Image 1 (cartoon, one colour):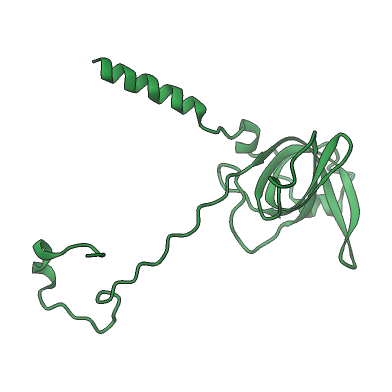
Image 2 (cartoon, one colour; image 1 turned 180 degrees about the horizontal axis):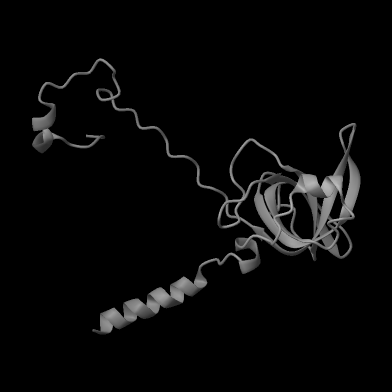
Length: 179
């Protein structure tokens, strides 16, 4: 009985230590305003609450805030940017305080929740681009995704010409790869 109680208490304590995604990041903002809509009509969407996310392009620290340049991506049900080769456009997130550029580095996934301040025009190479600017209340940096599992080659079963005449009856003698 004591072991059971100790196990339950340990599970509760360790569960409290797990990283928790903020509610504002998990739930979609009302209206679901898109980056392209804000670029076209910035005055109409000023002070609108948004939840956008994507991959960080650059991190620039200023006197009292940090500006993240982000390539927008579709978000999943939890608010995490989906891993895809499609961009919704770029936007800037103004986060209060200092964010370490070695942690908030390019290609990391981030989701921000905040209000639209307007549109800022900056250059991407020679091209002038209108960035929607979000004053972020929450900026959640996602943990890196694990690398894909390596392909495990099996010398016989991956061969398209392999034929096992005892296939359905060979189960008691089957051992999973590697031997």
